Image 1 (spheres, rainbow, N blue to C red):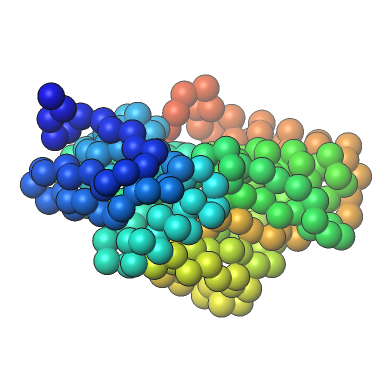
Image 2: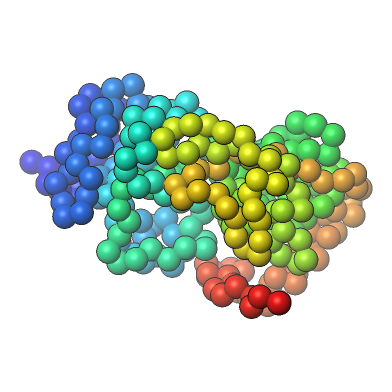
Amino acid sequence: MNQPGDDYEYDSGAAPTCAVDGAVASPIPLEGIRGKLTCKAPLAPYVWFKTGGAADWLFEPADLDDLKTFLERLGGEIPVMALGLGSNMIIRDGGVPGVVVRLGKAFAGCAVTGANELTCGGGASGILVASTARDNGIAGLEFLRGIPGTVGGFVRMNGGAYGREVADILVTCDVILPDGDLVTLPVDDLGYTYRHSALPDGAIVVSARLRGHPGEPAEIGAEMNRIAAAREESQPLRTKTGGSTFKNPAP
């Protein structure tokens, strides 16, 4: 017989009842939900430090519609947190209350959608974004090559390196709020400061429109190589580390 703490995967039917201290029991009816919901999911395997406790629930949506439906049913009544690559996160031993959402392949694409513009899923990696821009002659996004993370995290914290940051390249982002509302926010609405945005707690960045400027692929590639070399000189790249643990002091 399954016990609390076991992993469950639900495709349809009644909501699970994971009776553990602090856990949210029976979050929603799951009929028609196509993603994977895991009860008391250990999060250590998903973060680079490989430590920390479990999420009450870990949801891995099949696609955008699946995520929207899931959050609409939650209705904003349960805490929601997005988890990206896990390279810039420490999970407390006591775990994470509520639902942790981890975006998969359906959110990891990146494509040219306008003049010197890319539209990238919240789960797209920095190196994919920079490489796609290079291959299409779009300069200005090279710095993302040196940041281990995904677009959702970059947008959330105004990620940056080598004198550039997301505030310099973001046009708009599509965000799902904890109650399931999907909104498009222009960069001016994000209140960007150094490694900070005004995105509300629980908001999940599902895509972002990024803009660069025309460039030669060979020159863009050379700049990406320079960034990679500079990064390797300053920190170990062949092992998973926390990168820059502390923010630079305010000027």
